Length: 350
Image (cartoon, rainbow, N blue to C red; front, top):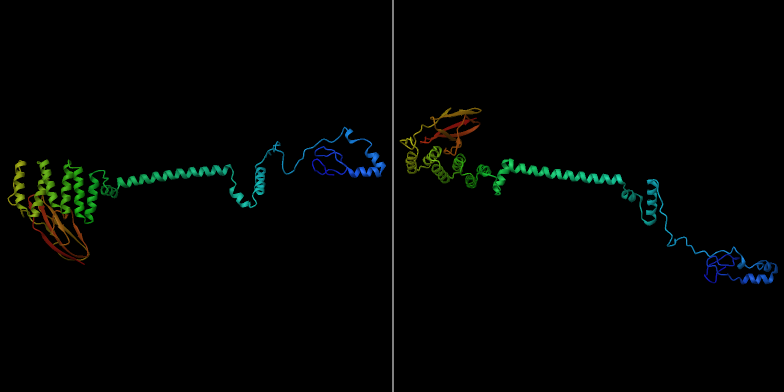
């Protein structure tokens, strides 16, 4: 039976609406009571309104929509597997494209999170240690290796005069004599007050073929240290080698004036006997050991390619060993008084 007030359906024999409580009209029941006196007397024996147990009005409850004032109770899970099952069920209901494999990939627990955090810390520590090792390696390479010294001098970051000496030696070995002379000069500027270092730089100038610079540096040392004999000796030998006899005689007079007891030699040229070589050339098998001797106080310089020996050539310090080939050995003795004639001997080794 439909209620005329709220429009809701009720039981066929209901007198009042179970939703709004309004009285229901029953035309069919009245018609039946007129035709059936027994039914009419039974239905009208006592008005429903007089019934103390009249049903009360009940609000409409929709199963799909809970009332706003009613709070949904939060379920308490005692075990992790129950919580995971509930989360999985909710995920399936909300996402029609949900896949269990994706859920397994996305799920993690506290242990996995802690493991990931520990891995990040480990990677960070390894990265820092690696950077420190690389920095220490670069520092050691730049400051404790000849290559590092050469690079510092080449890029203007030299830590001292020795860096320029290393660079000059490397340039000289590669045939860059002019660049080597510049590097040696830069080294001298950083350490000009060191007598031994400056004397060595002057000799390096001779090795580079920069004889003019060598003469100037020898004269600088003579002016600064007039009682030292080495600058005089090296400069006199250089002047003799270049054939500058007038400069040589002037230096002799200057030295006799500033060095008491110095005796001027009688002849500036060829006052030394030539060196003796043993064996004196010939044909040999396997190898040959060549020894050289000269007057006391003189040094022997030699070449094995046929070029003229000078003080920039290889200095004799021990037996020279030659192997298969043909060699033209030239040698000369040098001393502060001058230089000897050049000795030339050919060796053929099979």
